[in-house]
Length: 357
Image 1 (cartoon, rainbow, N blue to C red):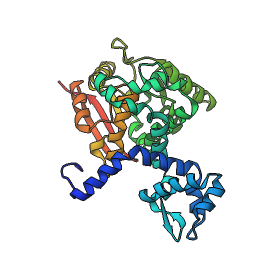
Image 2 (cartoon, rainbow, N blue to C red; image 1 turned 30 degrees about the vertical axis):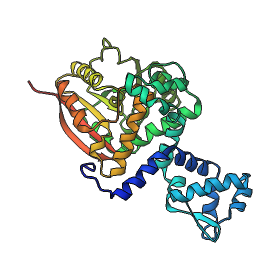
Image 3 (spheres, rainbow, N blue to C red; image 1 turned 90 degrees about the vertical axis):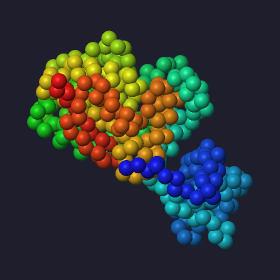
Image 4 (tube, one colour; image 1 turned 30 degrees about the horizontal axis):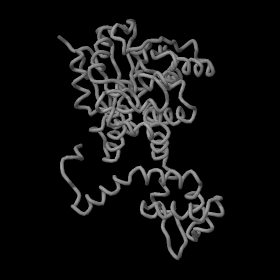
């Protein structure tokens, strides 16, 4: 569905939107602080009675001034309402407090991206994740993950897992339909898919291929769950062109992995998958494509997430459109045998095989 072919706003509405964009960083931080100080929760607890500025300040140990500027900012965002000098919770305030998607996105933007986004213009110029310098000296965020501050790691993994966890139960039957017993999980990260697979089918063996830092986390989790005999580990950096993908697997699985690479790198990885597969093997790819979303807001979230890849992850990848991604599959000598959209929150499952000559 194309949400972006027509200008749906009047000139007045467009100018108003422009002001929201201009003050975007301000309202983001105000909303976050209103949430984190407990102001929104307090107002919600007061119900229709509401609370005065002074009551809120006293209950949160803030000054009257501090509470006032936050609350007045919240008024214009619809987080709170005011009648007879008493504040009650608005609908948007409810979602800031309780919506899991909003919480995950807000924490990810603040803890992982906010400072780094200052370098977006430089990243666009250089094709490198210039904002990563806020955390240290690495070439990509993936090398840094195991060494980032705990609260940053938590926000990163919560974001990453949120968009795949609800999809896994839906796609497990599509992958393990009796043919797949030995699967290679490329970019397995903390082992979420491998563990879900081992629990789903007692006949499956999973090999996770990833960077050493990620494998350490996955190995510890597998050991804790008593799945070490079902899950193997292979340390490989697929950015190295000479890094081979081993043969002997019934299928290759990649979940939210290929969006971590440029188009040329995607083609290179998929060509190596092609070489590793036998004629009856499959490559399963689970990805959220912004042009395959049911709702415009889902496309919005994915399009904005692309800039995380630009400024922090690696400088050259994004949340792709299906149009661009499918060209990479074709260029690698693969074809899509089955395609399922709208899985979970935002995912598409592509089941690919070698293209017949």
